[in-house]
Image (cartoon, one colour):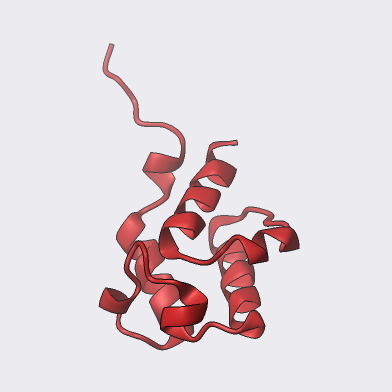
Length: 88
């Protein structure tokens, strides 16, 4: 019986997510590195952070708590939070 890919890995494309965030921030996707600090390196303010959150909710059909806004400081954190939501 062939193995099937299930869960977040099948749904969450890392580069697509990177492009989506870059588009919201109006920066080149190469600037949205795994470790770039959104606030310090990419000038993300609270409104932009909220826009990222809302866009990801719509795109991936998940509910993100507003308390996650404080955690969403880097691409890696956003990716991990989203992967967790999609796996649930």
